[in-house]
Figure 1 (cartoon, rainbow, N blue to C red):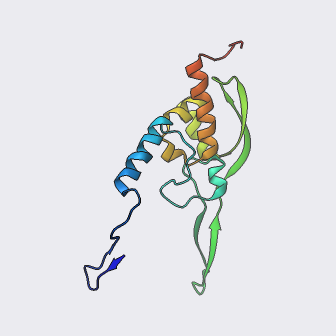
Figure 2: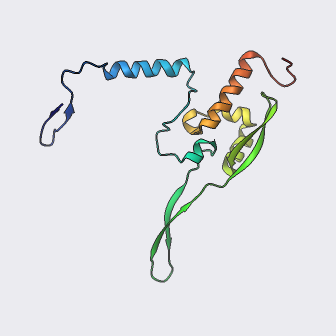
Figure 3: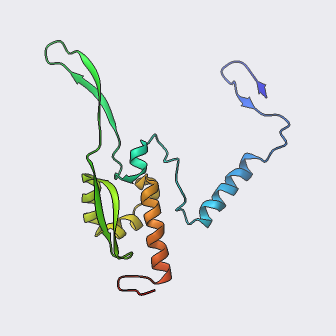
Length: 154
C-alpha cells in the first residue's frame, strides 16, 4: 500500500492480484437481483439492535439520552426501549397466525396498510430492518406465486 502525507493523503493499493472492487459490486448486485431484493439482510445502513432485527419494529430502535435533574441540571445517561410485545398476527395469504415481537407503532402501520401481508409486501426491506419480517415476506411471496391462498388445499 502507498501512503502519502498532507491534506491529500490517501490509501491506495498497488499491484493487487485479487478481483477489483467494481467486479465485487457487480457480483453483489446480481446476487441481490437473483434473490429479488429479499435476501437475509444484516446491514440496514445504520446500527440496529439485535432485538429489532427479530421482530416488526417499524423503524423504532433503542433511544438514548439524559435524565436532567430540576435543581442542579445534573445529567444521567439513560435509554428508552421500544414498546414491544409478543403478538400473533393473522396472515391472509398464509392463512395462519404468525407469532412475532411487534411495537405499538408497527401495529398502527399494519392497520394503516390493510393487514400484515400488505404491510410486509409494500414496505421497503430497508425500512423493515428485520430478518424476521423478511422471512415472513418471503413465505408470503412464495405462497402468492404458487397460487396458495385462503382455502387453498395442497
